[in-house]
Image (cartoon, rainbow, N blue to C red):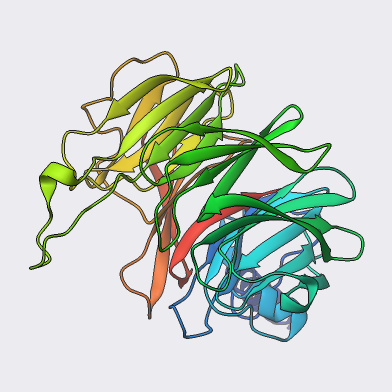
Length: 362
């Protein structure tokens, strides 16, 4: 009888343990715990559908937890989540079509407020924290062309100044007391990187780099790398006028001057993203349906793919140098996030939300 009783107790404990373990690997309704080691995955959603969302990858359990913004705020993220940045422990989620920036605590995931049209935002793209009290937001304006940088008071979450920079102000980086803004034209056209003095919050110069620059990164030498999409000119029948079109390019800026410009062979080339590794001596970019790796000392474009797969979004985990690619099958169903080692070997993959477009790291 005693043996039977012990068997039943052990069996019950086994069932309970199994249930608990199963719950840990299931992301349905789960919420990350403060202090976990992981990173955010931003899901853009379908344009006009209002189904953008935020996921969180827990490295300790190798679990992708979806809908963490909704689970912690009881409201949807919005329409077309463009980007997310972490600054001083807070997450700034830029939701372009909803004309707002959601601010959350990056540890507890609690909502801290919203920067919206009433605060002075129109069509935000990217956020860059400057100091404890100030941040910059690139903004396309209501016409999706007019390019400005909004200076935001991070205490009141209000726009305190608007800096005109050109058409389609997009990604931006900081080097010392200067911020460099890539103007990709928005729905228009531009060819410049604009320089802002962060002490005066004023434009102090610009650099002509090539047609429609969109991605911009800083290497370990504080030199700047810019990727541009080039420009397509169309004939009356909507065929491409190749003679008057320009190919995508990658340019290197040293001391505020273009020191190297590498153009792709075809105007039809698709250049999607440029991301830097943690050491700042190698970067990766999407082109020709593959990911390529390039040294900051290189003087020509690489010809051999590093990863023979192209992604909608590309990121590098600064703590591991793992490369994270976001795959989007369409804009109505879940996407997939792939993790690769710095050697280009696939580690694993996970289901995210609709149209994952990038990551944010704490």
